[in-house]
Length: 471
Image (cartoon, rainbow, N blue to C red):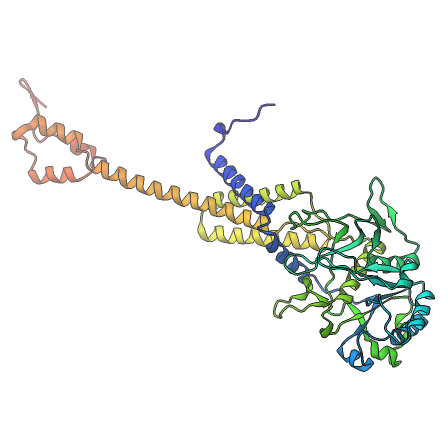
């Protein structure tokens, strides 16, 4: 198969392709080097915030422990007796699962034995541990719950800009011990009542829960560049809601002010929301268009992860998906070519600006609709490629126009210095006997030859004679 030579391409087509390829290559290099990573994170966060609000998830209830609750119990950490009393009341409502998002590696007297009895007699209770990592020594789980395999880790992955956009399902430590995340452990307790258990996906080592295969995060997925992808991570598909989960205070539960039917057949999370304890994280929903960033309590973040796992397993709502790197590069080049092509065809500045702005808006719309469907498409790199190739073509056309203007001025100056050849011949043959007036001769020299009537040059001032014949 023979491909046409570049030399046979029209110059305009070649210029468009070269510009699009050059700009797309520069943008791809910038992206792969990580220069655009934080800009892409900001675009991702904006897409999350622009989502339409969703109703409150009634499958998860949060029992919050704020500063007012701490003052009421009189100490922090709360004593084992207070915790045992709280768990006893929740257990009486028969929830599907109870998540204790509070570290309890050491006893806090009094009431240690009562709390251990609650731990041992509550099979749907999940405690937490923090796995040791490079930046943390870790926290051990409650011994009784660890012996019963009722523990999940609550380590949180924070991106370089201080925000959480990924969750974890499993983590294998250097000693080859596999640990389950706190959110997944609670979700599995809930799904067990629905007859859903983890399965190996067909032709894959990935985990399948119900209708969804959970694809593990890779280091270059979405806007990430060479990111640590150890463990079984996933891209978080956060829901936007004015009130994501029902929340009640610990004090109200202990004092009997809460109807315990609220906890029946649901996942109940217990965790701190107190500002003084600083158990909070920034996430895409932390910012608003007209308000400063506000961190989200860690217990609410775990609730979001649980909700995503349940939605994916029960209703097939997938976690965020991304294109392969090769397809993303083609996407960037396609927008680069479109910008160059439109700028070449539409050369009127006002019309060109309107069309290009409309194309950028269309790109944003496509990415937004895809995001609503669970796909994170590149937005910033194709926008930069589109704008860069457009500017390149506009600059090239302006340069060509300026060069053409200079060429016309140069040719005009050359033409004005060339004498009229016909008049020069008449002047030579007529000599001093020419009857053409001096003023007319001067006027004819100042007038270009192409503006003079032809008859003017051919009409003699005196009819020539040939012998005895006069014409």
